[in-house]
Length: 96
Image (cartoon, rainbow, N blue to C red; front, side):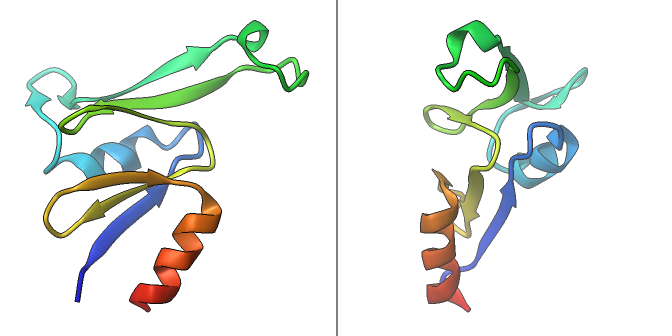
């Protein structure tokens, strides 16, 4: 059976994401695990909401990014996958 740990990126739970990814990403003495956010300005968005948001960024073999609402899933072999709610719910149904 494959075990996974997962956290949904909300746009403001950076500490929780660093904890999830601490065994997967490189760390440094100042910032800890190399998990960061970047603000996406509203003029880059096509939603018309007029508000920007924070994207999650980290390096786990490849540069990875998660938008708010996406799940960051770490498998027991330390592989990382980013998925939307629909895919995560399917995965959750297979592992329950």
